[in-house]
Image 1 (tube, rainbow, N blue to C red):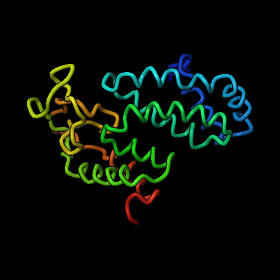
Image 2: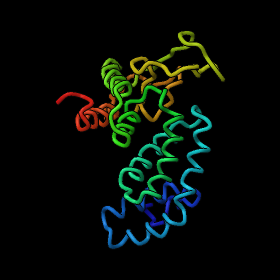
Image 3: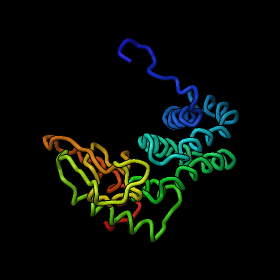
Length: 210
């Protein structure tokens, strides 16, 4: 923070501590590789615990899944120790099982990077990217009440809402796909990073043609 105090210690999130150390190991192995290895041997088996807890509820605080996705992406893809990789993949599997039906192009591309081609998933990703292009370019208010069956509460759809109809927000894939109402006044234009990120991953992994 500006006053040099830490904003958080991640003391109850061994998975996130491991994720940051994993990245540090790639950037500066001489400094961080020994620290990472020691912490991984002691804590890799615990990485699954917070992800398992979060995966029990796919509607509350949906942003948690975006944090899980980007953290597990580096933990899995950068790990060459079979035992550690298996522990991280177990945690990733719980996250993926909880979110794979959410019509999420960003999460789909992370899965493509970690698990290779899948014709059905990859075709859906292309569709979601095209649907994103049909979305409003500004933060207009969206109210889908009455258009979809509700579950749990009046503002939650039972099933994920199609990408092109979802409420407007800053980064589509980190917001609940079940949300029926939301948005702004229509004055703020989207930055588009929620399209650019999965688009270029799709180009790199040849989900989209060159």
